Length: 429
Image (cartoon, rainbow, N blue to C red):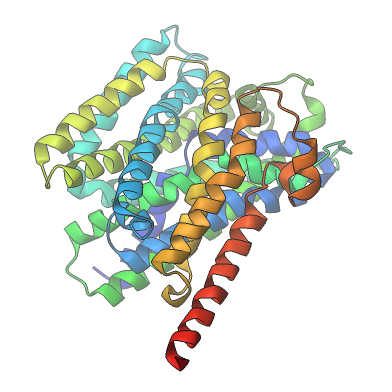
């Protein structure tokens, strides 16, 4: 296959595997809340929902292994525990959420069916695609992504060029950090380590290219997918900011998106949105279930039976949890994300930067520091009402629930300096 065509196909597949339920319903709601501060919110959102995930894809291009390789420099046991937690969270929350969003936005407005029927049919179709593993990139990249992009650009284009009203003034207290934290809810950093592994395995099935060729392919596809995500997210946030004043103060995320589609494209807008939601959610669910099944296959000595059983269990869990309300799934995901997201971000960064700065000791120190300094943020998400005012005074960014960032950076720099100094002492002794 032509290299340019293969790069575009892989980029389209990456975009679709990333762009799911949260990616669609969260940005307009952010714009609705941020008003005239929409651009600052967009930058914050893009850090956690574009930059970090694309760094994750770049790290996968370097490693060209499995997700276990992401954390093995800390220790094999830690890697196993971390990977297992990530896949449990992914298959237990964002994957079922895609069925829930599909029901609320694409099915219930037109058909009087229960969420159980929707999630059952939905995950049967997911299962069919998952077991046709070798055709994954082609099915998603060639057929589904172009349709998703066409509908998205239509909605955003009409809204931006037809609404001349400026965005309303907003009292949003922390637009930048709120954008970063809302980006957690896309699950895209977790998606990067899960989906990246899916893409690596898919490319290995389809191609016998060299390590260098595959690294270039994945890196270029990741950059193109990231650019697409940034444009779409910024457009959706801006659209939400423009149309925000036309909605009530207590509008839900899904009702806001439905309303914007109706205002921009009329009745056909709702139908377009229904198709868009279904496709965007579906590809993400496929990516998560496939990634989890690949992981089970690997830890059980390349067992095809383990792959099949995991796919069945993952789709069954999707049917059960997918019946819940979207808002409820988002709320219960917050503590899980507050715990696993900081670890995932530092692992992505450590794997992306040059190896000479990321020895096993550096991995251990940075990850341990991140876990320790993210505990207060995790406790706050549980609603235990602990007093962290003194913590906020002494730890930079802790009032924004990002108290782990500065200590992790210090640990990275300090450990490298210490190791370099130790090596010099050994060489002179």
